[in-house]
Image 1 (cartoon, helix red, strand yellow):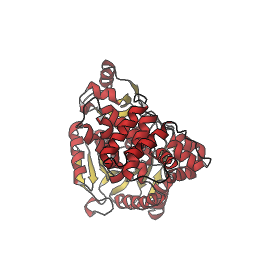
Image 2 (cartoon, helix red, strand yellow; image 1 turned 90 degrees about the vertical axis):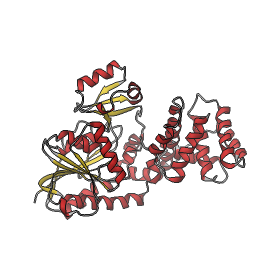
Image 3 (cartoon, one colour; image 1 turned 45 degrees about the vertical axis):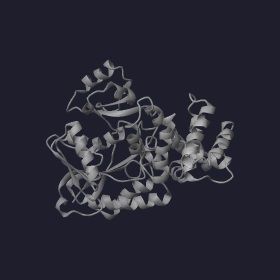
Image 4 (tube, one colour; image 1 turned 180 degrees about the vertical axis):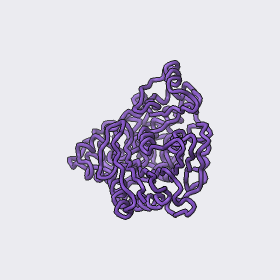
Length: 428
């Protein structure tokens, strides 16, 4: 079963070398047989989803911690045993042991064999400690659990951590190329499972079915509902001049460009390859009023002063709000890292606010759920910049939580990812 070895190699790159799951997975899938692709994807994301829980099981069954490469392999074995019912236990064990022989030149194959044989009959007993129980049950690091519990309480944290259905994705219809009604007819014609979204131009679809149908790629784009709501909340006008200061990969910039057909969107980023991604995205969606430019969000650029009607400041963040789709995000979240990010976010917001015209609006947003990255950043900004005032966000197509400043969308409550946004207006 070559797909198991390929899955292990992807996971090893992610867990030991810090590779991005989506990039590493896509690179391998391009070179894999079609019949293997679903299993590779399932194993990679399945192991990432259960990684914290599997760490606990490994620690419980081993007298000392194995080498990191073996930890990854043991997690693959555990996933095969516990989640892939189509693979018999003996097959799961034998295939994992075969990989151990390749990786360790046979030295650790006996250890892997013994571990997995014990794991077959292992019964997970959750600890009584609340934080540890939540961490293991939902496979989320303790630091993240602590932050969520301190801000939302135990009951709401449990709700946030409950997995949503990841088989359906939100897509936005590209009305430059096809009418919404016509696109829906294509969904029906191709027997693609779907439901109408909370906004008129979006659908929740079975993405695998959509990909199999091979529709013209520019007819739609995968875009989180929260991302769309953020753009809608900025209220871009037909002729607005807009800055998306942290734009890559470009989904929000392109949506705002569609909203402003006689305007212009400057899409900023600090990496050349990401600017190239934005250009390709624009080409696919047939959008010609987006200009990708090099822009360091932390450094003031005098030529942009007092230039823009609207600014989207969707800053780098811990990303915990989207961990359902990108589980490797959790590996890098610590309380210290969150504090460091909040300082960067404040710098980016302060710098880019100077590019706004008097009377213009700026949206500050993140795809996280931590107060220190969200409302606290806005509160500090308002104290230091009395020429700005907050504009209350009151019209939302989904349920939300009103914070001291801005609004918070939460998974399983808002029908989308965890996302924060606040709207600020320059007065003078």
